[in-house]
Amino acid sequence: MSSTFSLDPGADQLAVRDWLHGFAADVIRPAAAEWDEREETPWPVIQEAAKLGIYSLDFYAQQYFDPSGVGIPIAMEELFWGDAGIGLAIVGTTLAAVAVLANGTDEQIGTWTPQMFGTPDDVKVAAFCSSEPDAGSDVSALRTRAVYDGAKDEWVLNGTKTWATNGGIAAVHVVVATVDPGLGAKGQASFVVPPGTPGLSQGQKFKKHGIRASHTAEVVLDGVRVPGSCLLGGKEKLDERLARAREGVKRTGGRGNAAMATFEASRPAVGAQAIGIARAAYEVALDYAKTREQFGRPIIDNQGVAFQLADMRTRIDAARLLVWRASWMAANNQPFTAAEGSMSKLYAGETAKFVTAQAMQILGGNGFTREYPVERMHRDSAIYSIFEGTSEIQRLVIARAVSGMPIR
Ligand SMILES: Cc1cc2nc3c(=O)[nH]c(=O)nc-3n(C[C@H](O)[C@H](O)[C@H](O)COP(=O)(O)OP(=O)(O)OC[C@H]3O[C@@H](n4cnc5c(N)ncnc54)[C@H](O)[C@@H]3O)c2cc1C
Image 1 (tube, protein in one colour):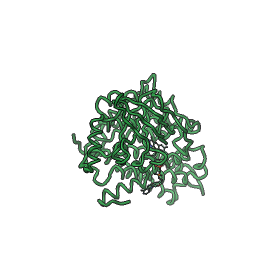
Image 2 (cartoon, helix red, strand yellow):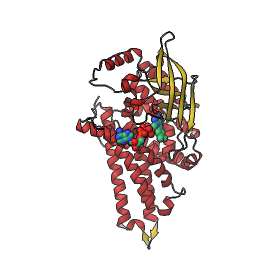
Image 3 (tube, protein in one colour):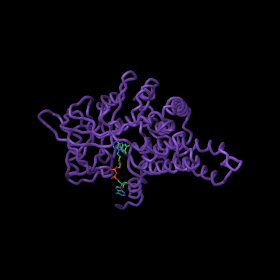
Image 4 (cartoon, protein in one colour):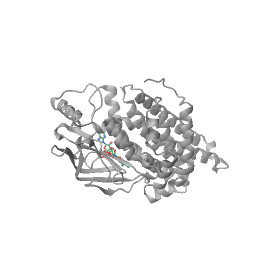
């Protein structure tokens, strides 16, 4: 189904935006500093979001399948405007859900995605585990192995994952593993590890620079056995894919390797999160510049400060246009011939870093303290040029797409 690209999200999306903005302003923002300091998952906030239907499979499915494509970016921008750490604690589950949506059968989607969210009375989270200590940007270098035990129709997973959002505290983990190491990225597959599976444990929990309300940890897989039905997409499809890869037959379309399929689908949404942070910092800085007086006049009376704000706002709006375009293209099956998804994430991520740094400058000494939120926003923004593909990797993807050359 195709819909015309429009900059008017329509009444339904605007109502969702206003509803989420209210939650972000009334519930997330007031809790932000506390959970940043505690560096813990803000379960009470997630539970409140679940009670209101903001943390639910239904809500995300509705936004995900909205033909305009802007449902998810609007939701992300508002939640992350509230706070990025709490925002990620609320939406981190969707990365695992998207992995199942992108690679799973209808039955697998129906079985696992509801368990990722739990219920409002018994809230759960999910984790997507691809990165490893020696395989970050280079996802083809994964060492975690999945070996099939035909006698029991089970897969046995061994390896160590790192930097997994919700890793170890998740009910459902989605793990990307190598089935045939000789095939690199083409020899990988994604597996669901159901709740309570023996052999999966949390390793180190990381203390971080920003987004500290979001849990990030290693996940250790030690002889983890999962039923054959936990291989996303099923064994027949995997065997066909591996056979094609072994014959060296080039795929003419469809998805690439399992991890890349997930990242591709989620990049514009991650860009929208960055825009939420940038907009929040810009608003604080604009307000401050109008009220803070030096030399007998508001500091915004100086062109130097006013032009900073003009640049901040311009970049935020440009980033949103790129994100909405990519989201609309994805929802309407338009091919990303110039890596428009990566473009949107690159520009929005860099914009968040730029805008929050400018905001700190405009707030002067106050910007450097935890009395004002821009210090936290600046720390939070830094992850947006690192995760879901670093800015350098986005540039690589864009450069290859626009040039057709094997740029390294
Ligand atoms: C808070 C947080 C949450 C995360 N959540 C998850 C998650 O839920 N699931 C998950 O699987 N992963 C997650 N990650 C991992 C994240 O995706 C990786 O950190 C990221 O992909 C970069 O990998 P790396 O850290 O190993 O950096 P490296 O790949 O080692 O890169 C180091 C530097 O080298 C540059 N570089 C590398 N290769 C090239 C190249 N070819 N050309 C130019 N420059 C290059 C990079 O851009 C970067 O600047 C998370 C990470 C963090 C910090």
